Amino acid sequence: MDHSHKPSSARIELRQHPRCVAPPTCLLSFAPFAPTASFNGDAEGEGVVLNLSSGGCKISSEAGVNVGDAMSLIILLPGESAPTAVDLALVRWGKELCFGVEFVSMGSVEQDRLRQFLASASIEE
Figure 1: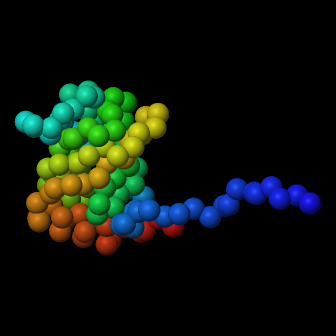
Figure 2 (figure 1 turned 90 degrees about the vertical axis):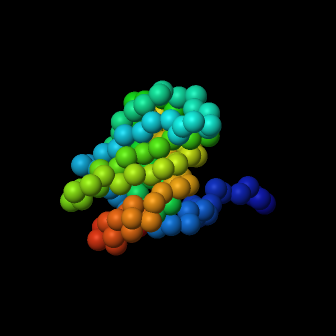
């Protein structure tokens, strides 16, 4: 009798916020969060937002970052006249040329702008 277990194809979803695929024109820049938090990666960098939610985003970038790095972000949302600033974001994971950040602190105007953008975008399945 074979009691081997096949890997389950079901994934446990840990995300708290639905995400959407970002258009290729959704760019961002980042810099270390100053002055108290440590930052071990590149001092500054640029990237492309691959997916986006109200709680964070996935970024493609050649800049070196490390899990736990604290940074400030400037996101250029397509169709918006002003950039969206994230005062504090933490790198939660990294793999090859991509990394994910959690938005920890941002102003209410920026939160509203991000929510409106996400409401008009299609949510990823």
